[in-house]
Image (cartoon, rainbow, N blue to C red; front, side, top):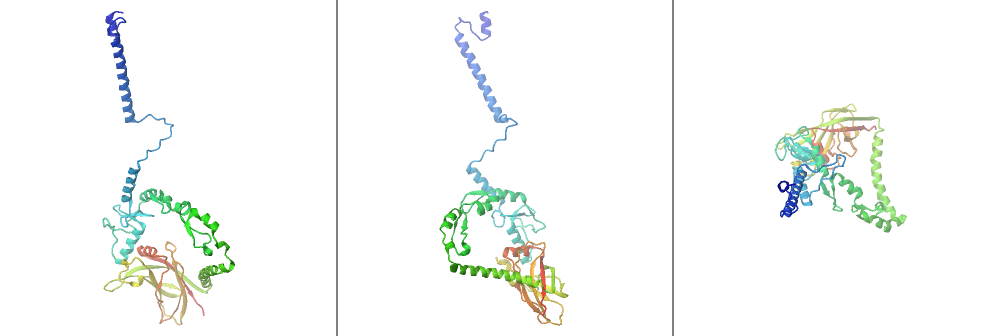
Length: 375
């Protein structure tokens, strides 16, 4: 091969003086090509992602740093909180027509306040009208809130809100627990993990019979009160004349200068007599909307004329389609033409939250039982 051909191929002749330079140039060129190919491959990987096996399970998502996760949770708290109490909802979430969120308690409270003030309930943010027909539940927000972390008040660890209640009641080792001998007078309460040690040292199982008699007497009194109510109801069910009906309280306003809310039912017939029920809020105080504690009281009125006194027992219970909790209480009254109405008695609902539920409803539906006492 001639020296010209060797030069064209980039390889020097063995005896030429440029043989060392040619080898070095080829090596440098190969390294440069390899470097460019590696850079192109890296760029392709960054752009398109690494090639993955379709049968390979998906990789876990990369967790955000703790600082960024905390900031995200804070932003979600501010976005998903109730517009009234500014706290995260614990149960149902309602929204107005413009999307502003309200927890169930605040939503019911707004509707009850509007009923007491004879005003249209409005959203605190945009002042659009709100009602049970105009507002709807936001299930997506309810699900999102249930997955947000919350601190356990006992062990201070974080859990999703959907599992926090179960953790506090069943799993937390620091939850406040009572001694199993509390019914016989042990006052101890403490963290759950200390319960076995306390019960092993508790002195109340070793009490004598004389010491236990006082505790058993208090338990018997409570049991006797409950049994007295049930025995009274069973005794009333044995009466010859028993009547019941569904009653619907409708809201009205007094004719005073400062109108007050009251409820009244249409006339109804039970035991061949005509009756009416009336109810009022907080015993007709001037501004019940300014009070946190709210109660309902009612009275029964006999509208028909009677020839002889009519002695009756009566009680109100919740209607078949309402979820309000009412404790049964039996009332007695002797009706006549002169005493044709009872005094106002408290409707035995558990708390102000239940009262707000009744006030927020369009009408209050209950069930009335009347038992005529035969002489």
